[in-house]
Image 1 (cartoon, rainbow, N blue to C red):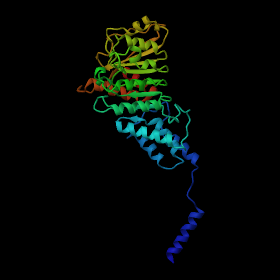
Image 2: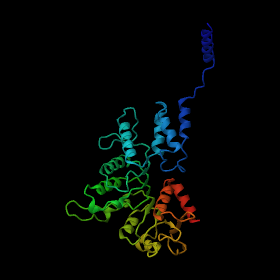
Image 3: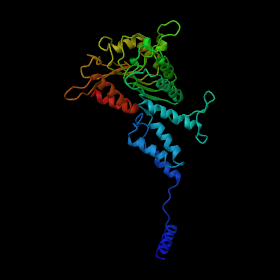
Image 4: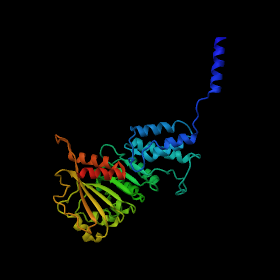
Length: 350
């Protein structure tokens, strides 16, 4: 009898004082404020980051929350640093495309429903063992970039493109990657942390190198405003041709570039007919490194080219590998997004 009486009492209490209920719209409104504002958000948060883990957990909470949580997850957390994560992302996009309940905001392409809606930023480092000689991964990169090309605006890559020479590329991996990156005509920010994105390959029929216009990829991106490259050669003709073609370029970041002390960037830029275009150029290296000009001419009135120097800090003992130090530093800066990238570069110059 006592148990039944207690049960009746609890039922009365729950009926008279039900648990507070939040409308779904209010819950979704709160979830929208979990990521930072777009102007301060990173390009991609790591899988271990609390933001990624929170949004992933929310996608598993309820059907009402799932669309909002997924949108935020795919907007802020596309961090692909292994072949496994690359395959998982492709599987997720395919499953989303096959879901009849999933909204499709973009028009179909090639008779297939679009899977991308909010995938605007990506960190891509899928190759292991410091080599691109991995055909399945290269093909997966092509599939991924083909899907994301309509909306992808910001991209940071860490891909060892120099690890496979054109004459040793028997599987055509460089050709596959070149076709993949050529599609990214919506890119506004691009950083190649390790090397330039030079993807020369041998012709099948005549066995010769492709020309400049087909080997250099980034000049084909018409919206590009911020470009960061590692170990460029300022004496390279195709570098200058590419810069002349990229008409919307506003910020150029050259980490440990060659020929910095032999070629005066401002003079060469103007001599090639670009004097009317504004451009901020950053030369980044450790203090005293070869990638920093010995002297920099002061900017004169009417001069639209601004030369800046970023000195990567070293440890007290100075025992780091300078190459890895600079590559990791510029990658970390670029992942902060355009505004954060600019702020960190200014901090390097002080």
